[in-house]
Image (cartoon, rainbow, N blue to C red):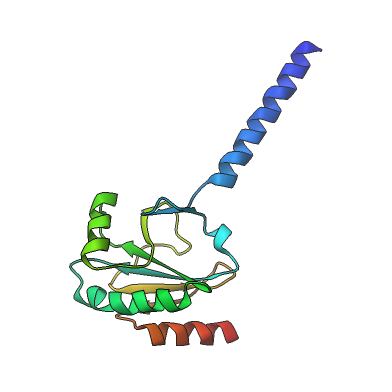
Length: 155
């Protein structure tokens, strides 16, 4: 009976450990160490912008993305992703150098789309259902982003 109790306890502990691991698994971590899973963000619209320091249109759109973030951060989450593999320290340097005011993803483990973009800047619009609704290529502005999301919300 003792062996059965110990075995049952071990199985329960193992299952609980697996469940906790799944429950706290992060798909990405921001520079501020906030952990997120794509599924936990369902119910919110997301904008994910890929940029690089060597990409002139990417740098030109940062003030517009800052404006979009400031005006819509209660309803629509904006995250930036460096196209180049940079360390968190380098990413922090880019954030400061270019006055990036929206959260930057420092560690990205899984994507809700198949692969990183082939050109920059690229912006993904992810619906409240967690599905990619639109991929926008090229430089964006705050007004256009909001118009695209508003149009997609009506569909």
